[in-house]
Length: 337
Ligand code: TRP
Image 1 (cartoon, rainbow, N blue to C red):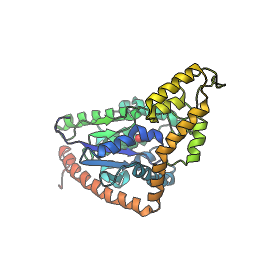
Image 2: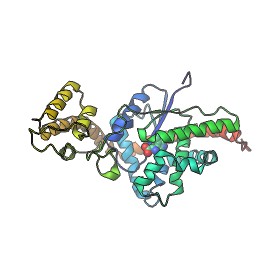
Image 3: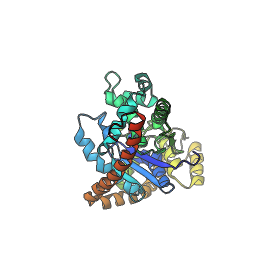
Image 4: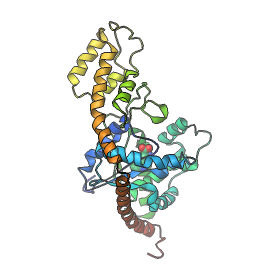
């Protein structure tokens, strides 16, 4: 990116508590990046959450604090990262309207992320227009503060590509150089499988381990995790591929040498699932316990979270106002500026 200043922006839809998939997919990168750049933003994407929850605003409202708590507990630091609420920066909605003219209906309907989510949500036959357009508003989420570095889960990459198309079109159409290319930052663990072996850990599939789960919940979930259905007796040969317990050990167990030995033993026969599941339970409990404890600590003071959001939203709005002056100029609607 040459000598362009790196500005980080990321966000979550407040539709539920966050899980291990979020942690490895993007939260870890948020924490790393906030230490490397001078400007980082974390956005609670309540407007985006409403695009497929228009009939349930209370759910979105309740989860605003939950997603912020999850991020704070993991170590996203409000001293380094500006936390704000999407709906409270109306310039984002304004920018979305102008970006809409630079995107075609066909581009949006063919977007791989949108196509997958429409299927998952049962929206194929009847698609909320706001939902179809969320990649446009996501471009505005990122660009209102001229962010260019975006930690996201890998399934969001086509949405970022769409944002880059908008940037190109905007700069070319209006003969400006206002926005610079966005780079998505994805983790090397592209996507965490669910405990049931489904390709994705997802709230709607009910196969998640949450960052706020108790030790008991973690243990119960790990004990139910999908392994090799043909590995019935300890002495049976077992399969490692597609075995969720090994997939998780690969991700979370630091002791790679032991994991390799356990795999060999499992494949040969003579290693039971329970031994492995106990090992994995301990690793996950050790990872999640400090996060949950910190979460509970912060949650004792609900005003603290709202104050972080309020202060951050003021900072975000200042950035937004600055950018909108330039946008209005480019669009020749700077009548009163
Ligand atoms: N679409 C993202 C998700 O579902 C959330 C999000 C909204 C986001 N706006 C963003 C992520 C801007 C990065 C940048 O996970």
